[in-house]
Image 1: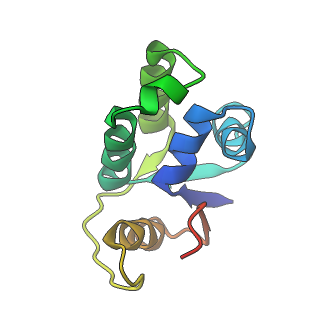
Image 2 (image 1 turned 45 degrees about the vertical axis):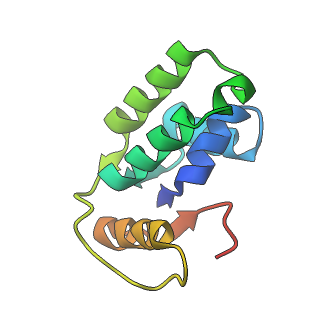
Length: 116
């Protein structure tokens, strides 16, 4: 099975490694339970979220561990170019980016904490 994780899942995993999102990334990285597809746009959204004022104080892991996790994400995930454009989620083009990555990567499942 191969999935695309929304940036909110990745950020949540970094904020709460013991929570559901953290367990999802653990399953991808450590146990290789399933594959992960990402795109440059998703990774940039994660980086932007982590640079937001105030996020750092909620991180339960060190800045070095955050950086290592992002490198690991880039290394272990299959990256699609992120060139496909879709317009299926009203009001949030970043969600369209997730759907486009799923289509580009041929994945059947999107993991997101976003109700849309």
